[in-house]
Amino acid sequence: MQIQELEVRHLHTVAEWLHGMNEQDKHYVAWLASDPNEIFEQIWTLTQFHEPLAYVAWENEKIIGFIGILPFFEQKLCRLLGPFSTKKGTDVIEALWDKASLTVQLHFDAVKVACFKANHDLVAFAERHNFNLYNKEKNTSPASFSLLSFF
Image (cartoon, rainbow, N blue to C red; front, side, top):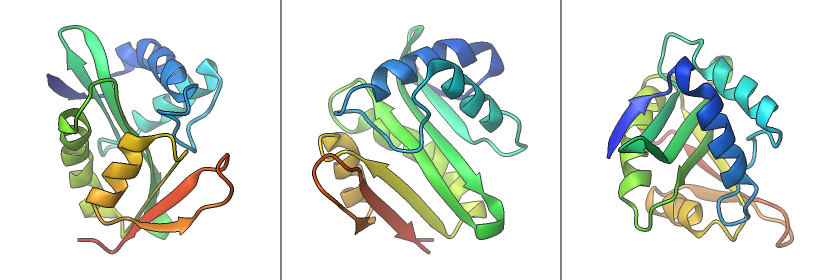
């Protein structure tokens, strides 16, 4: 497995992959656009900052994971797009977080993630990293987690 910063040349491929992942409740992450073209624009924006805000996990030439950081620099807050993984276990998710957390540590005091309860991998990720559940409505609404001042 290789983890690389998202490159502009991979935007279409990654946007299509994310679209397919986010259509499934078991991978759904709030704040990611639903239309492939909107996802493209959203992740393209992440490539326009000086700081790395998106990473892709590759196995050979196949995408197996992604994490993006939606920044709100003035509020020192970010929202996670992911981490996503097609592999069982925590290796891909944790490797992506290891990369992204370096930027998060430098610029943000609060990190938020939201997903459906069916996204067991992301719920487990939030629990492993001591995110707090701050919003949970009926089963069809995303559960929202936040990690405040964790560094």
